[in-house]
Image (cartoon, rainbow, N blue to C red; front, top):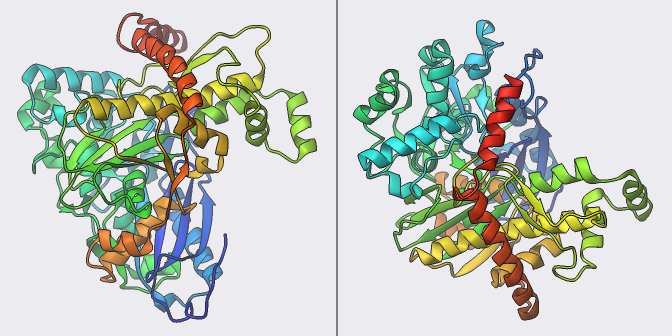
Length: 559
């Protein structure tokens, strides 16, 4: 946590933003006048990610990723009061609170918001828990959703680049219906965690426009029809009307007022504005002052989400959605992404960092990532002789196939850990370039690239992205971009600003052109990118289906 004070802090109106990530929640106290971040605090989820077993030890199949909703409440109990105390502001100065969440993170609840996993009779049922965004076990359902929509020429399909993801609301719900009908029948609301946490804060359930559009296939005021859903599975026909449909709240609107119970959790005043929920990536765009058409923000953490607003409506392959007003009012909001980025680097450090390297890093006062980065930075481009595919957690864009997996080509007995590490850094940059090219070839220009998220601190990685994409990189001026963005939306909900654009200009932070592409390096990367695209299309577009066959073999072996 940190604090930043001036003489006016004691009287200044403030807002709180809370960012619920994959492993922890972060709260930041922000001065409404100018966006100064007065203090922040983080609270780790005690159950982290359940991807191997439930809390009682029951084993989970491959590709599952669950969470425990009480962990989210613990963030409100711990991170918010800690940040408030560190900020040195009086609770009565806080005029609003805003939240954001990873998406699509979704959970089955009763009509009063009680999660099914908190009912004793369902504590041992995996489908009663929160399905984290990276729960990919609904790929078969997603494939059927896409195939049927294409066959019926459903008009909403093109808004998602022609493919529906296993990460989204309908695929995950259909999996529950088909694998645990009792849990499905008991579910009275199929709620985004982004909306559930707002519900806990203010006592009012409002579906936010962002997740409804990007994750719930809500387009032009409607969800997929009951007729279409019945064709998927007769038991799914009433999913929208029975479990999903609910009033939609626009971004920056008031969802309700802080309840006495939530005030006791957080130490904030009862009755302050609680903002409509939002998604961690989308809420970051205004925090990075990306409020003009063509300004793409890549939020880089465990995964990367690419968001951009445009005055052009286009059909871009593999998009996670094109939503009118999905990020900013009066513009088309686009979302794309890579399912694994920081997670890939973390996987390699856990599995490929020898003891001798750990000893050397400790002697130099570096952590594993810093040490591998320093060694990799000494290499010429292409010196390692490797090319990798960044699909260790599947491919979100542009292929939308979470049954794909990682590849490293060129390994020899002379390959060192830093060689592989650099190849993985480069692979994620190649994935981002693939996404940018998909936009531009679809008539949606990308004018600027701004990076946000924890990986901005890796200067080598940032320079690689500038060189690979041949674009100057801007870098957000906050280490808490999503939380800052949520606080900015809270300021709008509380009436401090007329709209999010005005809030962004006053409270947002960005360092433009922080990294510039080197023409010689860019040319060298063009050659490696050509090899990446050969592998990308060979393994990802059906020429060689080995990754899917291996998945089936693994599933059979673990059944």
